[in-house]
Amino acid sequence: MTTSENGDDLARRYPRIDVRADVLYTDDGDLLTSAGKTAALDLCLHLVHGDLGATAATGLARRLVVAAHREGGQAQYVAAPPGPRASVGLTPALVWARAHLDRPITVGDLARQAGLSSRQLARRMNAELGSAPLDWLHRQRLSRAQELLERTDAGVEQVAASCGLGSAATLRRHFQRTFGVSPTAYQAAFRLR
Image (cartoon, rainbow, N blue to C red; front, side, top):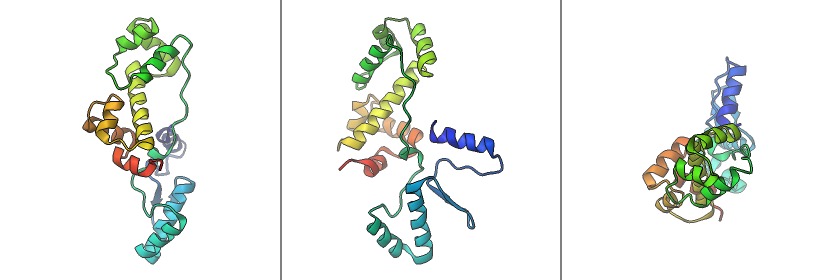
């Protein structure tokens, strides 16, 4: 379940609660909540900043070896759970697609790799993976972009080309829409040193 789905589920179960699934913490005056353990540190630093000022909050953040303030929502910090597994028949086509994400790939290309018609491929992928072929491919491209941003010093333009999203502008638009943060901010937060 994604962060958004968890938030939607919580909102359905408790309709009188204002659920904000895309933030690290909330400060509603008398009521403060955080998204998890690390977000609780963000909330504590927020409280220190409010009570003692920026200098105290920054000093505490340095001692804790954490960022004094993180931008963005929590969604980009939550690892996606593994999705459903494809059958043995689809697996080679999906492995092929992942190995060629830097190229244009059509549903027809995927179908040929799977030895199916485009319609058969769409039915199989929906049944086995819960996803249309192009939606699956788009998620793979964004996942590759995340990997490259975390593990390399590649710029946004190079990452866009390597994962098949074409241009930096396209990568930025899709990345921001999906993860709620820019590729550059994601790389700054998660780049493995």
